[in-house]
Length: 139
Ligand code: DQA
Image (cartoon, rainbow, N blue to C red; front, side, top):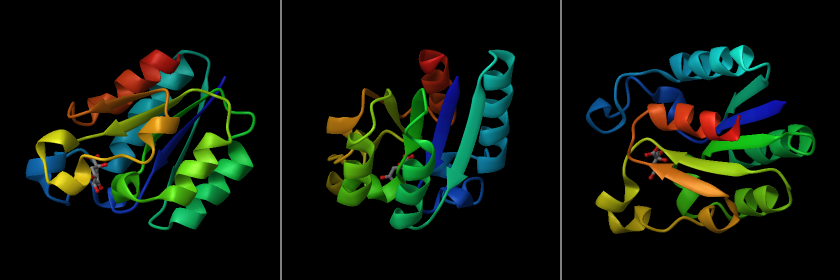
């Protein structure tokens, strides 16, 4: 079983970036926890972060076709990343959209996700553990 974890713009700054909103856990810690849980279940986890929409699309085109599940926090691309949305729409496996913060309690521009209509489900507001819950569901 092959699972992808994609992280969009600014998520490489987790731990330092607005810790009151996003917590103090770093992206490396999240990726390590995901990889360990996946390995324990006999699955492979491939993680990728980019600040560039095209790089996320390149990764999906290279690794998405034979993936069994995708966890994605698109960062702000959630709200306007139509190319990323189209790349996700072309894939057949389940997709879980994850947000560390509860985007619906925040600024109005965060209330709309262009990714949600092509995702299987969404987890928002449960901190970094949302990624782990997404992985559990995919497993
Ligand atoms: C986020 C929410 C987005 O609105 C924001 O642009 C992010 C992170 C979250 O995980 O809560 O970069 O996706």
